Length: 470
Image 1: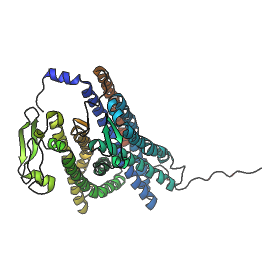
Image 2: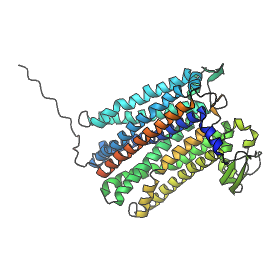
Image 3: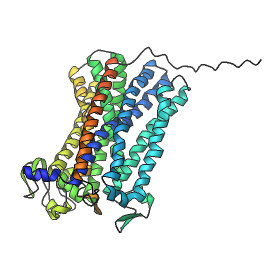
Image 4: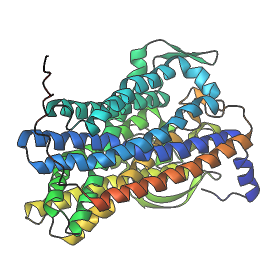
């Protein structure tokens, strides 16, 4: 986080690889906003539609109709913003595409054919089939949409996890040869990564639903209706919020084992801590990559061991960044350090809000305290920030490697003019800004209009007119 001269900044921005990284970061950060909600909201739709089929309470049916509008809005923006990411692998990262194409293309193909097409294929039935197919068939379509959305997460995380902990391949002459597809998919990071992301999308979606429900409750609009969604959200989060914290800890343990440079950057740890010793934990710090030290830090004595292993002394060494040459370790230490703390801080804050709300629920004051409802409204976007911060830690902390320990990022960028990448980056910024404003506009319209309680219930399917033989 040291200061940089204007000349150095201009030189940095003129670099093709840097601009390609920045472009992919912009497209990935924007795209991530939309599937995060669709994957979690799809499960919420399965819950409310299932409760309608079980209880025949019209409120649950109208919940399914109302929240599906937000689902399809996110789905559309997600598709529009996600396609450029795959094209960039060929245009901006051609050497990487050539190196990993034998299996990486297959996995992304699985995501498109097995997951995206499944979700898209049943989406029409879910949205427009209420009075055209029997309720059980419609419910099957909703479940297939949810399954497809989350299957997409599985394949994408499997591919990205392989980049973090490559397995099942042999790098020979700059080309990754497939030795074992099973080991590629089920690489060391995959199970925990998929679980962590699944819980993140679900938690983010539930807090968004809860925040919107709290907003209606504050306005005393459809209060009983949105109290139902608020209760569903809280009931699910009682298990999900603490489970996410535990899975996040497991992810940190894996980083320590497989990516020690990333853990050192996450903690801004420059000096190695030998096994058997205690170490302070830096709450805040100002990392200086040039001097290989922290200019200042706010530390909690002997806390790092408790965070990593629930004990004061480390059972194994924790290597500091100074153990590696600058070219072999993350350069943006400050970004990784603070992105990690934002993610963890939000995770604990959301769990705390869930716990506080649960206590008020037990006291019979679930929706009576306006300050608590405002807390939910303000917490609605925090899950997005946590997810984005987590991906920054995951990808920026992996640097300087695109495939950790085997393929460098600088060796993976296409040899194209920097001006061309800068032009496409500017175009993406403009188009994504338009998409973002459009999404906010239509999302606001959906929320202001509210649920349509006059929609007829699809209790029966009209029989086809009988054919009269002449």
